[in-house]
Image 1 (tube, one colour):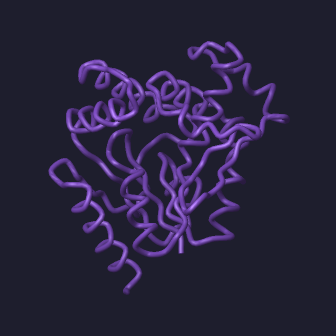
Image 2 (image 1 turned 90 degrees about the vertical axis):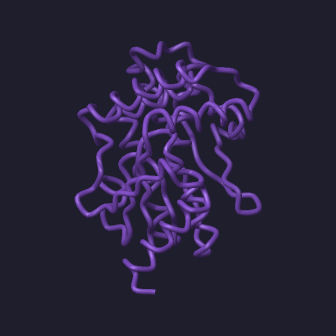
Length: 221
């Protein structure tokens, strides 16, 4: 079984996907982490975030991937575990920039689809239900208000020792939302058969509970 979780940043996709994977005994795949790894590579190469085209020349030799330790996902850039390095606002913007490049999306497409063929997965991102796994049995598009998402992301950053105001986070988030929504390749929009789930007023546990109900209804279990 494949479950696709899409939606804008800060909506709580990762928490929801992890919760569903644990409940149903599936593997969680954070596809955004792969783009963040490519973004980190671009930053380290000194490629400017406003024109990441040069990264395409390195795709033949670039190696990014996922591994799992105690059911926790770890992100690899070549052989380096970069899981703790890819969650900064700067890398978020790099991820948005590289994800708009068709060559980068094609580079990562087969990696993601292979995992879904070989395992039952809960995969989150921005185009899972529309492009990566259009055949997914369950598709959820998770949304929340801009202010709620910004406050959640601020708390997440602070837990990692990164200081930012709500206003700064909100501005970065809205810019990324706009870039992701308006890009020509795989725009971040709901699949036609996706279930819209607004969790602005829900706790993490309540969001997972609501999604479990959606999965059970769709799968008749």
